[in-house]
Length: 585
Image (cartoon, rainbow, N blue to C red; front, side, top):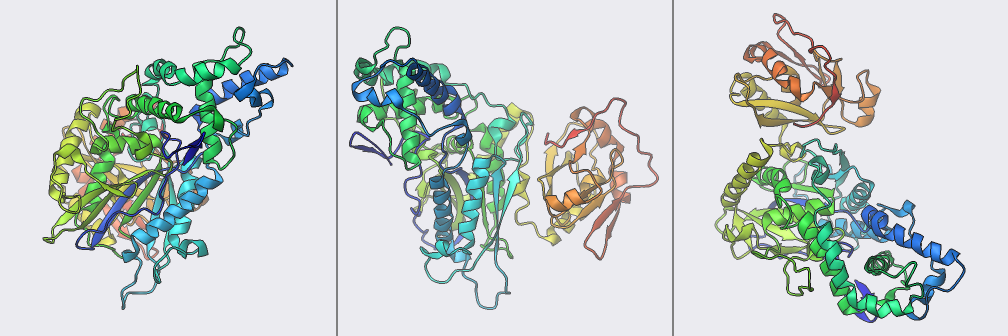
């Protein structure tokens, strides 16, 4: 919560912390939850990069210049600025605060309580802890939040059990990092706005125009205490900067000297201003609103289908730590806080709006997709936003008494969204870190047999690496003859085992269990393939005949080797072909 001049405000668009960490959704009537996938925003920042570089740093530089002149430039309510020094520096940019780490830890504890039914070992179960993979974007703020969450969810720390009920199993958690290359057109990451180069400047002009409206009253009130109205006047942007400084003071647990400068109406304007900006850059007013979360949603629905709770050691739970943008994309895809035909006014504050970023994506804000058994034993799915079951799908799917939806209807709705995606992006992109979730070793061998049986018309396979695991993605292609590269064929074998594959265009590459093991092998530390322009040539060099004659060998050391058809001549890459770092296309 933020306080200003005696007025308490819970929400200040995207700077506010998650206000009720231990809030839990109601339990469905059947009490049987079968699986869940969550997308989290990272924890509280000391200061964001954009807020610091675009607003705070220039304002602090302006203050420093006035202070160095050696003459008074403020009085009254602004007198403190005469010798003001902010604790915020460039070193604090993008860093999760101590309060943010503590909240991330508390959220891990809250989820341990939420899904405690999976942490009670039935009698007769083999010994050993269940496991949970916590995925995260490579940004430090996401990774730090993920580590704190995972530590608490594991139950291996004393603090993590103080809110628990009864004796729950400990969990072996592992944090896994997903890199997102700029403009890679890949969804195998947790930073889609970077991978697809989404216009982050959308809404900037509207924000600039609206800032004059939302700061008008406070500027008129405070400029009387600003003594340099000619050479360096107090501006609307200066007022906004002071509000930002106040917010970052408070969310970091510090006293703020700006506390007396603003009233409740000023904060209402501040929140509306930021909501308006995000409406155009990440919300319902953005181009292709919600589009970039379609592959994630499709993968989540697929892996949640047909679950019956815990499968082996792996918990039926998937969590990923990401950014504000991705959480808002998903909210827009699902129709959360949607108001038909609403457009933000640029002349006044709309206090009755549905769109409030602080309710959707505060620090640690999250969206979950949870499956459960319905009253008629059918598979159901519900949407959970920040601990609350929310209506979704724009009213196109009918909810039940638990606020959930028929899985088949949700899947049909999702496939319509997939078709929209394919029209815009020209193909479908996998989210493989979700897609192989519950695949067992037997499943992988069955997949090998299916592929070797040449039942691959209209498809090609791409392989991808996520630091420590190899997986498979299926994607339509326009080439006249279907084909599978045996190098790719083996990537669907046991993903936790080392896989050595001879690559005819590059040096042999070894996929190992961990990045450290990978670095220790003779293979390059980075994985490569040919550029997109030569994919067609590669595809045609490896035909069904190659697959039919590929020899699959299982060694005693759990290592799998593929030997391509020795009768076929494999041509080298075209002249001038430069390999590049592996990406998803």
